[in-house]
Image (cartoon, rainbow, N blue to C red; front, side):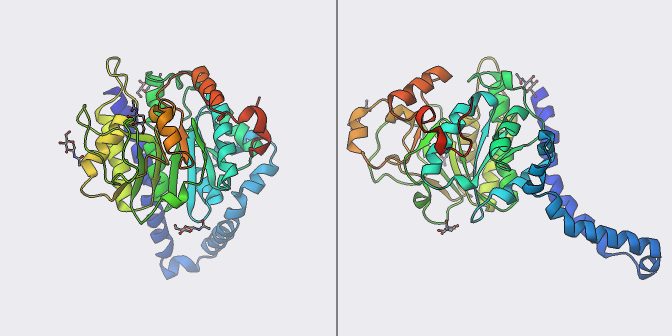
Length: 355
Ligand SMILES: *[C@@H]1O[C@H](CO)[C@@H](O)[C@H](O)[C@H]1NC(C)=O
Ligand SMILES: *[C@@H]1O[C@H](CO)[C@@H](O)[C@H](O)[C@H]1NC(C)=O
Ligand SMILES: *[C@@H]1O[C@H](CO)[C@@H](O)[C@H](O)[C@H]1NC(C)=O
Ligand SMILES: *[C@@H]1O[C@H](CO)[C@@H](O)[C@H](O)[C@H]1NC(C)=O
């Protein structure tokens, strides 16, 4: 209940910008002629126009950079950041807290190798991350307030982790409302190839299956049938969406499902079941596309079935280090498979070497 109440204002603040701007525009266009003839009003109006012309420059990351204080990044908003970072109307986003910075850097190196790093926007969940990324790579990190308590946010299965991941659909919905295509990735991923050629057709939402059983190489791109728990096991770790009504509907449903089933000590949920229920409930109205397993395998397959890995050699595009919990274990596994790039290749990252 408390989490339900807590999340309401956040949801309202999402729709506010859209509602406010057309309304204030209307007021601005409607003053009567007599009102306009008053000199003070004319001066005020011209001032407003001059400010309006200048404001894109005032808000540009370049001028923010010239101000030495990091605190300037506090006023950098998601619309500012999305407009600055997007290329070809497309963004690649992740959401990270400070503890995940080594994984962020590892992921970034792999994306840089595919020449897609310029459209990466890091949604910082704490101020340390916001400052650290923007100091090295100005404009590529944004914080959507409120910042979370970082120390509580990284234990998988905890309430802090739930609170942290529950913000994901709100961020993504806001980006869709701004009109951008968006790819979301968890940062415990490594790109071995370019995923964009796999985003075929004009579907609303693209995603990958988290089920570890082997599928035929030419499996269907439909939403798979529900599993044991009555729902599918689609991964909320990698999602690509076009700014369509269908994609927005899935994000709204995901937010609703998270509110309807908040974290509890018994369930220790994360955001993935809610995403699957959102897909289940919107399936008839939204154009969904399941990406090929051979290119986007779950960690439960890639790290556990060497026979399959050999059979599909050269077909892998994004590897997800899941089906394992704990930072140290994840790092060791990436290391063992030659996917921990930060030790030897940090210079390839736009962030350089992080301490
Ligand atoms: C998570 O969010 C709930 C509801 O907003 C709040 O009561 C709780 O204190 C938060 N827990 C953590 C660890 O952040
Ligand atoms: C830009 O995006 C369109 C589809 O949204 C795609 O067909 C095209 O290849 C992209 N161009 C570049 C240069 O990435
Ligand atoms: C949605 O879930 C219900 C309950 O498990 C199931 O019967 C139904 O087939 C699912 N629908 C889709 C489109 O997956
Ligand atoms: C591992 O992969 C092989 C080859 O694709 C497959 O035949 C086998 O069933 C898989 N093993 C398991 C345990 O899924």
